[in-house]
Length: 171
Image (cartoon, rainbow, N blue to C red; front, side, top):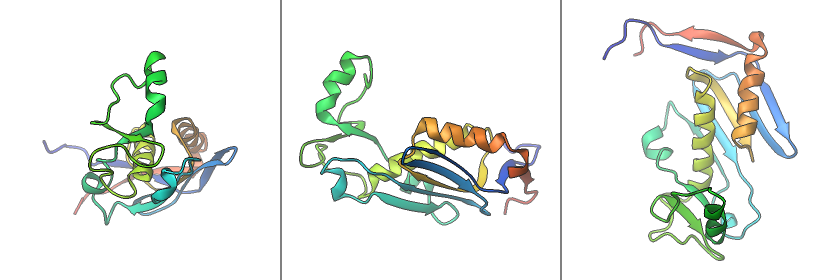
């Protein structure tokens, strides 16, 4: 249904960065929406696959390139997690199971950089909790939900670091 109001965006005007140990989340001005992410896990399977990715969403389809990225975890940890009321619905049909030497899922990964793209998907979801789509570039290195939440809070704690933007003609 066509809406009667123009869509509002949050335009980031100055860079904001938060850090916890060697994990970093940063947001900076960008005329669009771009997400870059780097991960690092001390497990041989992760090291077989790309650990960085960068996507400019004006040129890439969120549906085709990011939304299908599944969560993942070391399969031998699953029983312990379930005993502690975590990952209760996880299985190899909806998550990537990491074995000692490779991915356990039949058919493997959906794309070679699925691990890092799932972390990008997490970050995008965290950023959308701002309440409006951002016009910005996000860079994460080993970041997670808590650090991304701190980043959004730090952005809004500084009113000079963002402003409202609207576009009357979406075309």
